[in-house]
Image (cartoon, rainbow, N blue to C red; front, side, top):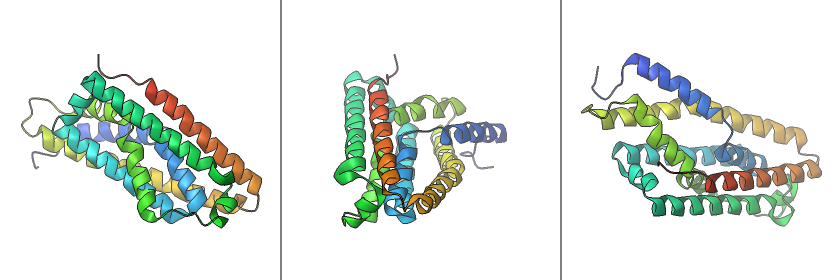
Length: 215
């Protein structure tokens, strides 16, 4: 077995932990649903792809020790929290701008490009300090620091996290698409949903500001 592949019990234990984390609600999940309901399945999947890219970036940073510097340096971590919170506030504003309802937003001709949806998903993970904290504090627990193949194993586990969470987020996008078709005739429902997304983003922005780095 290649040196970068962890032992089977480690793979199984991490898969279980990754599954639990993947089904835990967060700002990325709210963004997937919001993009899908407002702009369709393709934009939901584009956002998912962006979020996965963000996970790949965090995994790479952890493997090479850079993220540790971010979350242990107070100034850097505080700056990351501010950027992440402001990004979520911006997403909240986007959710309710111009009336917000699903049909109203589409009729206004303001549909974003797939690239913009991708970048939204990327941003939701890169600017979330809790994601950085997770990969710095949780991921290394499954790899020994003295292991010469530690970097490769961290990358493997990051890839495993994507594989475990991908079916879940795909199901979320498909469910959001089905829900949109079910409710598309009711503009007020669309407005209520977008205001709900805005409230969720604002709540997570407040939560991010309370996130703490390592003591």
